[in-house]
Image (cartoon, rainbow, N blue to C red):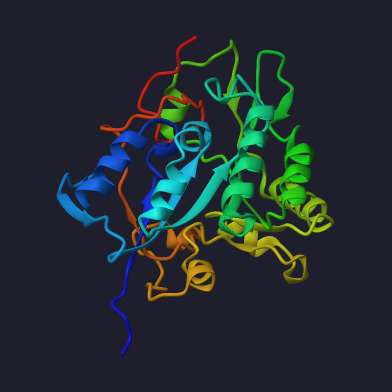
Length: 293
């Protein structure tokens, strides 16, 4: 007889729990459930958090330093939970991501995650790719450290890089700008296509597969032989291959499926308002605060 289907917890698309809210997370694990407020309907749902109900916790973060320092991963594994890590490591930029540790420190975290939990349960995100201009009018991007980061990931045996282009939301346009004349730029489709093909060629030489998150138009413009596919950032087929067990392989209809999201079903336990993210990234849709100069 097949075992009862377990759930996947997403922790979290809405904030950075490993960087800022692990005490709260561990309290939820200890109590056996999280009370999650839907970000739009405000409906409260009790989400189970015990190993008999939870298959895997997928942690999303730009700074796993506090998570690693607290040995939280080992504690969760001891409780019988499986873990998966989505680690966003972009180029060093105090303009775009002002409150992150230096890139050297974040690469050290990647090494530690890989050593302690294995590269098979880690995705590296370079997300988003940003184009922008400042006062002098020159078009700039945030790709300068991409080769260095990809070299580090490849050396550890990490096999997937997930990326997307910056979505310039209205509230992002309205934020106070960090420097005079700053403006995000949405490049033409042909430019996006060429950038992705160049990145894919670079990664292919390092045995890393490139995946696109919610970039259907870009993906459809690429030649099939390039091998770039849409991302499943909640990769339940992979989780099942890694850990076995019974989990849903259905698409998550609560995500941007029409835009090219390949995520499988999960339950996100984060909150935009109860768990504000202090990274203060200039481009982030989840950033609740004005950028301070």
